[in-house]
Length: 84
Image (tube, rainbow, N blue to C red):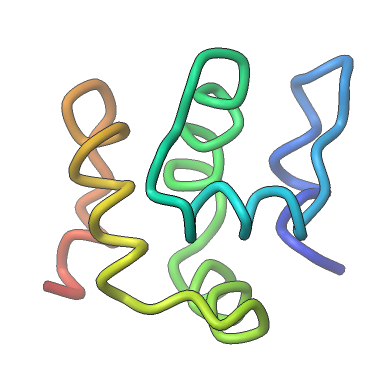
């Protein structure tokens, strides 16, 4: 099971793991996808997030960029931050 199962729990319109990966790799989180990214970094365990990243060829630098730029200013995840 991918991370989208956790991410989609609170939303009417689901997003796929592939779309989440594409957004993270692009480094640009816009409008309607931002809540999904917030949930990805705050509700998905770090271990599952790392498995997801590896499966989609997402680097730690790409994860950190999205987290630092879009999530951290609003929501903190100390478990994720301990990676760095």
